[in-house]
Image 1: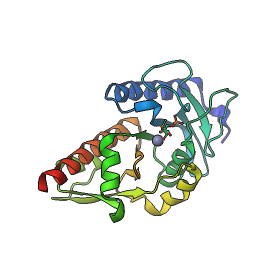
Image 2: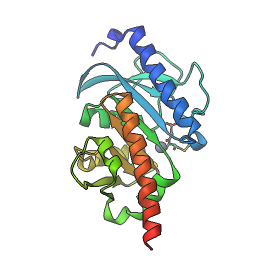
Image 3: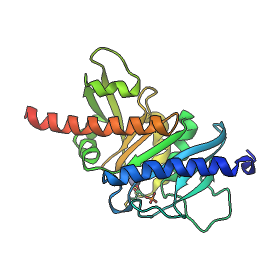
Image 4: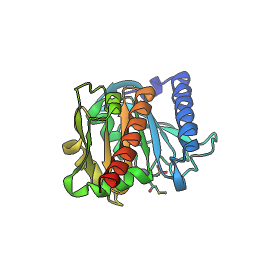
Length: 214
Ligand SMILES: CSC[C@@H](O)[C@@H](O)C(=O)COP(=O)(O)O
Ligand SMILES: [Zn+2]
């Protein structure tokens, strides 16, 4: 893609969407210790050629500044001259966009998502049985049973990237990195937010139900 075809209005709209969710999630305590990253896709898409706005690496996501985001291409390289560094996990966003064609990806570290990823690590996925909020994923089966995949976490992020293709499930818009955090996505920011909120609700439910049953 000719990245100059992204207009200033498109870029500003993407940044304003990111600021809105960033502020909301920060108020929920979903970015402890500068963790987490967010992105929204901008402009035309093919799996080989796309652009997205992503959070800059290492920022305090509970404050809003003029230096919070940058535009990158499908390889994670900035498309404009900038001193900002894209999120250290940008290559995960690149791969999820390539595989799913989604429009927005939100990543948060929470205590509940980390706990359940460890609880069900050996199983390879987090099972959820018949909880109403599964419908947030557009799964309407009576008493639906879903499994949210878990992949191992590595400090070297490029080691994680090739594991995504074999782990992402077509009807589940998210993947857990073991003892790290959830990546949730959707066709746009509204849908990615709905999915992330549903995952976090279900993780807390699964954890508490596990303890209650004991
Ligand atoms: C500071 S701990 C979290 C990071 O290691 C990473 O997992 C994370 O989510 C944020 O990294 P970032 O480069 O700011 O996008
Ligand atoms: Zn992370």
